[in-house]
Length: 247
Length: 263
Image (tube, each protein chain N blue to C red):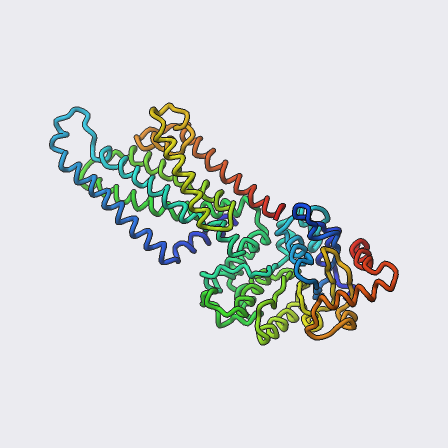
């Protein structure tokens, strides 16, 4: 049943012309960012060859590009999460799901995984674009994979947060603004912290993304993202059950 | 009719929203092949009762059994036996009718190999054969209602619950939907809520009247008709029933006795 709901969400997104417009525009912006970084690297390459342990092409391009994608995901995810439950409630289609032999867990996980699969398309597109570096240089695949993994987890955490806020209201636009405000507040909190050991960094998804961004895989970061997603997904399930109990 | 097996049995359903009691001790039962009309004016508690019967809303007290499965303890089995059309049809307006019905079929546990057949059968039953490729948002209100009914019967449930299925339709559409519901009554148990006595006269075998969250009257639709006819406002019928029953002992308690005396 989780698969049925996830597939329906994915299909609904892919059938909307606006989705393809957003994906196309986004790919254009990210390609521009990628080529800008590549161009800067090529211009500085001759000077960097004189420096000991100078960053390679992967190190020069991938972390910066991933940072841009992370920012894009923060602003883009609420646009998609807002409709997951708030729109169902506004259009009164939630009754179809609640009257069907489905648990809140299946509904929430289906919607979560459906949107995650869709946003993975953006991450895959970035990966494909970055892999073109391999045509001209030796790539640091470890750094690339760490960044892609980090982006996946960061995106999942934004979806979980957005899904929960979407479950609180019947107005999709309120859900989108609410999610964006919370994500932005978390980002500001992370930037406010002056050093990486600050408690605020430990609380924010972007703070834990830092390690992935620099190519460092820390099981603590992985646990944080799993807990962050689990926390908001469980809250969303409880909210749906609350719907049945309190109307 | 009375020997047919019970498909839906509700006992002592009570539902409060804050301090407001929306439904108070409602008990009813439905047998296979029976069409039950739930009559009442706005705010009588009809929609709340139907939401509790379908598991959309949890009652504060009372229990619901569908085809022998307790809705609270065995929700998946119980819900698999029920099809529900809420007052506002739960339609995804940007989906095609075929895609929507396929999704509804899968949600209700129809195995992938049988989905196409179930969709074709539901479309045939609801007169949607030529609308499969159409976007739901482009359909007329009557056809959207048909799509809503089609999703409710897509998995061949024993019990079909329809909340005011003809509200907002024009007379021709109302006639078509009533004929469709009557057909459904041959193969399924149907419970529907309505404002209109004409609907009860045309469709229902039995009637329960709700007033202020309680069942105040229960009888066959034929006997119900002695209180009014045609499109008479249900409010007038209430007054007539209450007046006539108040002459007898335990007038309003007729409803209570129905509620409490149900097995």
